[in-house]
Image (cartoon, rainbow, N blue to C red; front, side, top):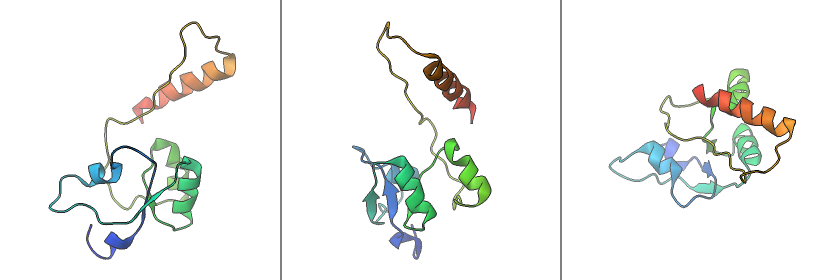
Length: 110
């Protein structure tokens, strides 16, 4: 990123690869922004709302974007990321879990 943006902390989860660098792409130099690892996505979102750095967000942050609590400073997006739902074969799934699973599956078009 270019000054003054290169000093803004990038809030991220603990991953084996740098999702921020993937978002930035193969530029002439790697991102030099300080990284702050915040494992909990709710805490990471609140830290961004409080102005402690930038976070990556998905469509689940739409209410915060629409209310103005969060602002998308760039239009560039990563594609091909999402959630995985895993359960043991034959495991009982109650109605609430089934409803949540159905809702998540319907969100994939966003």
